[in-house]
View 1 (cartoon, one colour):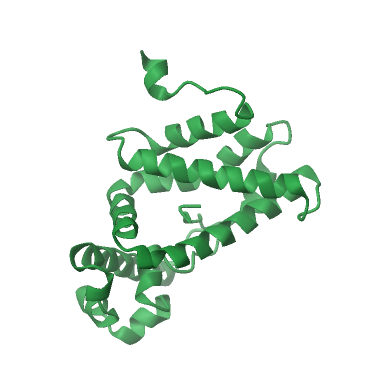
View 2 (cartoon, rainbow, N blue to C red):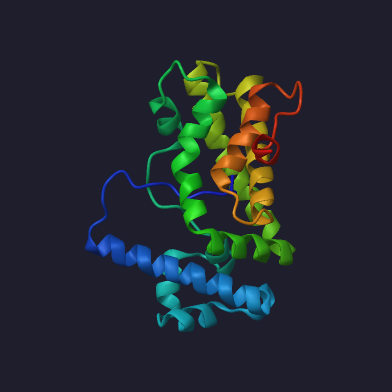
Length: 215
């Protein structure tokens, strides 16, 4: 999802060395996005990204395999898996609200970095050559959701229900992200919740949006 998609939250507080590595990684991503936003993907090199952060290309490759990886985020930090987060939600919570709760920390982190994510969405839109990698990331995220839903429901991972849920959840999240990119100050979590509310009623009827509720 945010092919999402999405950063995970570390289970333990990072030490000084880890914080330094996270800062370098974040700086490389920010520089890659800024340069590609300004020049286009073909107009940016690993050397240019590295120079913008005052590190060597060798250091760049310690974090990312390619400049495309830097633009899209590269391998995510270690943290609780989607399966672990979903299973941590109380069993009495229905599946769709439980999925929202499992994703909430990531959603709020994206919201807190709105300008960064809006630039990333714009870069992806303007550089279609990134789409195959983005699709591959989305497939990985979907596989994680399938495993999580299967574990929570007790169903085999190859049965229809976990696959259908993962596909719909991914589509709902992407739709919410696209709405968020053009919605001004609307909170991403509210938009994801609205999309998930539609899933929860089984697409039987349109659910009210935040604009309609506020009237």
